[in-house]
Length: 259
Image (cartoon, rainbow, N blue to C red; front, side, top):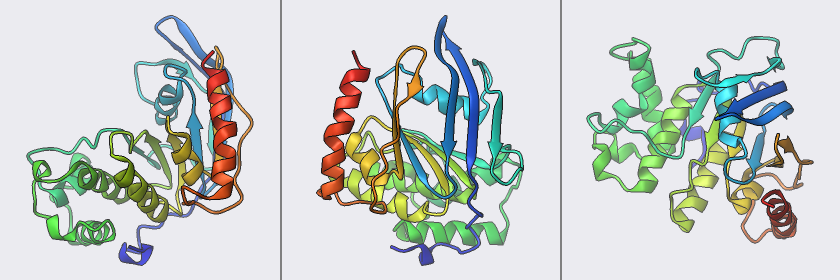
C-alpha cells in the first residue's frame, strides 16, 4: 500500500504545534504544571509514562475538551493560525457506529457536521482511503463482520478523512495482537507521513518504531524527559539495531518513572 493509493487532495501542509505552560488538575491532583511540549511539523512525537501520569489528559487539553480543570498559556501553530478545526483524534477503541456500513463510518465526520449526505467528492475521497487501507472490498460491510485489525484500519481511514494537519492518537493499537499491531503501525506511519502526530503509547517498541522524538513523562507534577531521537526514518524494523539499543534505555526510564 502506498500513499499514491490515497486521494492526493488529502495532504494538508504540515504544521508544527507548541504547547507552553500547560496545567491540569484531575480529582484534586495536579498532573502537570508549566509543562512545555513541541511537536515538529510533519513528524511523529511519542509519549510514554506510567498509567495515571497524565498522558491522555494532555491530549484532551490540546483538544480543548470541556470538563477539565486545566489550561495552557499558549497553544500555537507554526503557521500562526489557530489550532481550532485542524486537529483529528484517534482513540484506542475504533468507535465505529454499528448501524452504519464501513464507508459511511469513514464519512461520519461529514455527517456530524451536517454535510448530509456527503457530496460526490467526499465519497470519492472515502473510497480512495479505503483502497489505501486495503478495505475497498468491504466498503458496504457492517462493522460487526470485520476483525479488530480491519476495524482499526477503518478508524485510520476515518482519521485521514478528517484531513487535519495535526493528529492526536491515544494507544490506537494496544488492543491488537503483535503481528497485526506491527502491520498497522507501518500503515499508519505511511499514511500519516505528512501529518504532525502526537502518539500516546505504553509500548516502548511501538514508540521507537514510529517516533521521530520519544519522551517519557514522569513525576508529580509531571515533566517530560529528554527526547530520544533515532536517526533512521520510521517505520523502523523491530530488529533495527538503533531500536534495540534505545529500547533498553527507554525501559530504564520507564522503570524509574514508575517508582
